[in-house]
Image (cartoon, rainbow, N blue to C red; front, side, top):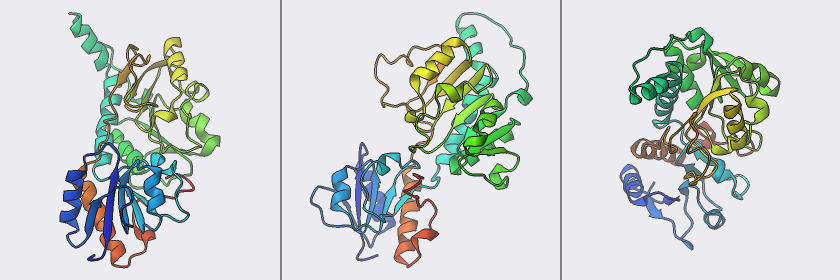
Length: 316
């Protein structure tokens, strides 16, 4: 590691704790904050870097993204063959499971209605709903989606899953009713009373939460978007909420972040909004994972042996 140079380039991120953490985890490496014109590095730790960074660092052995989603990175012009490695979990999956479970349970148990009643001075009970009627459909069955499916099953919710290709019903996906591919998407949507979006953002999945697809959900369905704002067509969601086809939605991600003042989402009574906080990058866990992967590469392990290597042609 003595000759390795690691550069850090993360937009809207305080670099000092990351630099200190990387230096402590990799004491024999040179760790620096990238500046235009900086010397070539061996590895980079990035979040939404500018194109200039990529242009000046074409010889990187690996580009480590401090998040699970790499859509912002893949919008850049990357040199052919540049290896992109995302975080594989690093404490995010349990956070996502917490967030989705609370959103599902809050809607299922109608806690939002109870809160409104109590705020109005009204003491009232709601008829209990049946879990058997509340199948939760998860779009995207990667590390995060699998952990969410496992958590929901612990609360006895029926769970459906949809992904681009078929997933074996083993491990965390045991007991999940799986659907795959475009041909099975309509059946998946029709069978899901609650829809959770955890898909990666790609050219194929952008705008997938549109009027045509959301209309296939059962009347009174609920939507939870914790992936990317560009998956959702805002106007289509609003139309289906106002028509009564959808009962409501919890949104943690938006096309423009922060959500602009005056956006109709802010005041809509059927929406619960949070500021992209469903699963935060945990710095200590992330630094440890990145350092472990760099040590493996420096020891001669092939990059294909690492978890989280991105197929840039697919976008995940």
